[in-house]
Length: 222
Image (cartoon, rainbow, N blue to C red; front, side):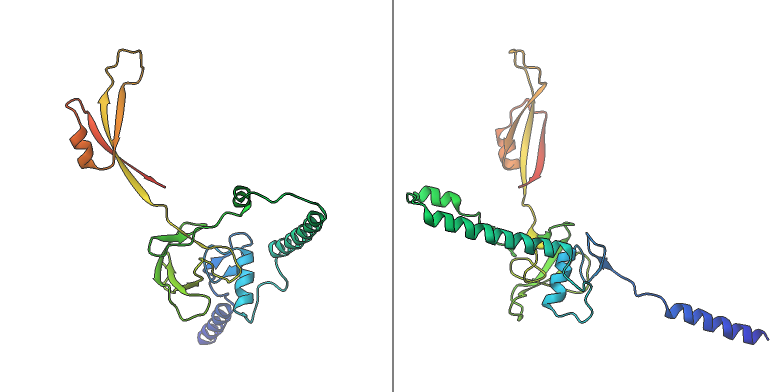
């Protein structure tokens, strides 16, 4: 009788285990949908699944962000066409070279993969393995944070060909050395100390006087 109860308990336990959902490691940061990589938005997930022809897609139709951008693009295209038509009907003086340069859109600086790289949203460091992968579009392979599986990127730092930029260079750290002196000015200055800044500790020591109280390194990012 007891053996029968044990077998029934085992079957129930196995049945419960069989219904467990797989563990989801990542989710999109705006919609909370299961995602293959960290820090993805719904738009990036949609572009990723479309680009790689994922069989079981998350979205049956484009998410609202993609639809909104497509509508904005169509509106901008119609507005641009109307402006060009109006401009062609008017006689305007040719623009000077300085004015033409001012109207040009700013150029985004390219990623420098010889310098440290991180994700744009959560600032996780990314270890770049290569920038010469054999894929025609995704030339960059790298590890995000503590991931054990490499992620593919474009040379512009995207994880989908038409998606947002996912990577950025880490800010470069700079160090100044500050010599601190007591302020003995008789001009009514209320500051107790005054500082001089130097590029290296050696330069700071060479420029110091006997009244120097301390030499403090100041680290900041540009």
